[in-house]
Picture 1 (cartoon, rainbow, N blue to C red):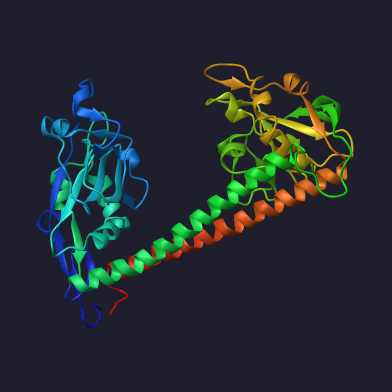
Picture 2: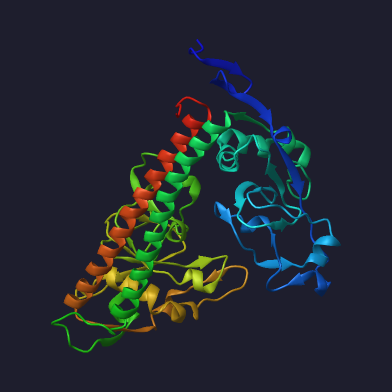
Length: 411
């Protein structure tokens, strides 16, 4: 049953006084172009016209670009000058990224940008074009053999719900408030990450010592304090929900875990393999990217975890080491040294026989634990902020859905 004050439309149930309109009817769709890159008269490093590519649409407001063109470059190419408040819509490579021009600008061919008419609030347009339904439409109608591209015709045909202008402005104002909260929290997280990085640099190199610790750090070789084992074959296909054993794939050391693993997320029904002991340090044995990428270390705080192939397992030989400290030490201080032992081109390998030769400086166990504790507290603070950030983003997505289809009304 359709609620009172609402109507059925091709976009679903909407408030009675809302319209369904095509973008081409409430704004002008403008493509982009690229001046001849070999003609130096078309390009400048300063005081030129902002010229954007799709990869530069990463934030809500767009004010600058990596490259700038001259007036001559604009006049003698298919590039078009777009006024401030133009909605920038990427339609090639990455399809459907949205930004708002905060300066007059131009774009390359990877855009079909929207100059809003007086009946369309540009901030409202920014939000409505980010809804799941619009994104789905853009992807559905993109075409091409070499790469997908959304045509200007399809962008003009795109239908959106349109409230009265005053309601558009109110909806945009509410969602902008959420964006401000999210941006402020992102900035705080970045500041905390910078602070943690600084702590690592001074604490893990003994440039700053805690009160009561003044004994010189001892030089030891990794092979003297760790036995090095290898994980045994485990693939993505072996991962199952509610498996009998927790497990770690080597790829998860890159994508899922940081310096310390407190909780393992993957599970498998495989039984045979190398099982972890608390305090193991895991180092990838291969990668397809770069030597510096492979040079990471992760401390594992759980026992009995099945460890996959292509993982070097550093298992403590002695008791007076804190694995959480050493994993951070290897990542922050000795990463370049570890990377220097990587071998290969297409596939890069890191062999245990080479890593174990690396000398490191090691404080007493009590100082190791103190440093690890302080850095762990910094980690936890960042993780809590990141969880809060994800919660805010989730709440905003839910609110967008309700505001942009009129389920929740504003006055």
